[in-house]
Image (tube, rainbow, N blue to C red):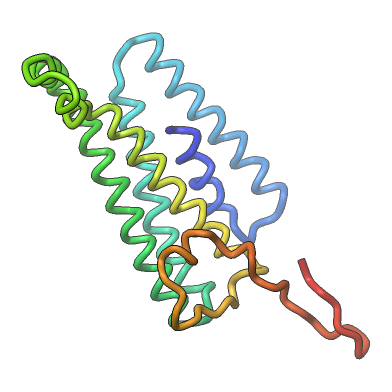
Length: 188
């Protein structure tokens, strides 16, 4: 989960920056995440792990909203993407909350799961729900990262484009065109 959040953390901080900045931040994130994982494994304490993950989620959320406002030209598309970002952010916050509850109430949750049995016990497997919801939230933010790429920033959302078409991503969009010396040149 740290790696998934780390990918989006890197993306929202380096969008429109040069390769040198991207490489330096990649190396810094790699070192910090490696140290957080090492500390978690070595000490068995997940506090640093939780702080690093929570900090990345908050940063990615706020930065994504700022980037959507600055980079998506279509008001309709920007509105749809902001709603998607809000849903993704709420999913990540719920996931994080469930993870924290699981950490602090693990013994009680185990006893409850044992008492009620399968399949209802799965509802109280909060660590599992954390993974499922975090993966969902990270997917949403990776998708938003695609929409922030230069080739897709000017995409228009049709009136009938619902959540399914938005969740499929911008890959079906025609490339932007530019005129060079009187000829049309496709930009990728």
